[in-house]
Length: 258
Image (cartoon, rainbow, N blue to C red; front, side):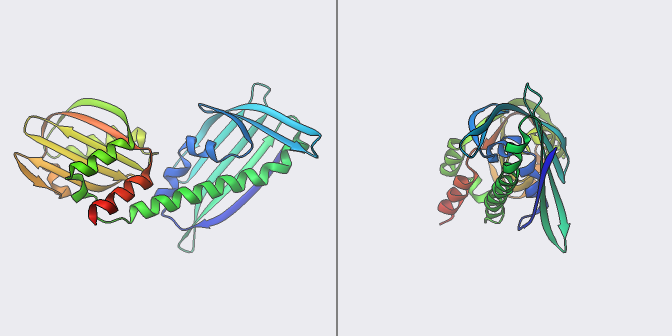
């Protein structure tokens, strides 16, 4: 088995990095030498000296996904296998991202020469996503924009509906109920949740798992205060969206705030 390890400091919160490394679609897209791509599947081709090559199709599976570690395997029908270990560690107040890439299978003498590039490409992808997420996280007031139809329209145009449900909310139970609803989508940097009943409505924006924008309408009265969520109660139709282009949403905030 051949392996390569790369480690570098990344200027981003651990919560942001954790969300990025848990997103298997992202990690898959960072891997170089792809000639074909499917859902959780890629075909890789490596060559040396223009004469010798290796090509195989691998399916990705996540083995471990914790706050500070994600482990992925890419295995082919021929039992050729990559293992990718991504770990977040703290060192003197800064976060280190450690990536180990291992390969076991046919033509190791060819594939092993590319493990360094694979590890560094994954690391660069994580750094790029972390930079985008950090910029979004430090952006000013989302709440006021959630009260503007123009911003909501832009947000929906650059988002995808992932869940629609009808739920009963008891007074004071809003946060735990909605937190459960979005749990499976926390790998996305931006999550937008909207809900409506006969007399009440709410809009809430999560960035890297944290509440970053709130809009509540209770009996005709508008509020941008997170505490207002505790007053919500009744039967609601709820829609959950994930942002496909977080940086475009950020530009929308800037435009609306200008």
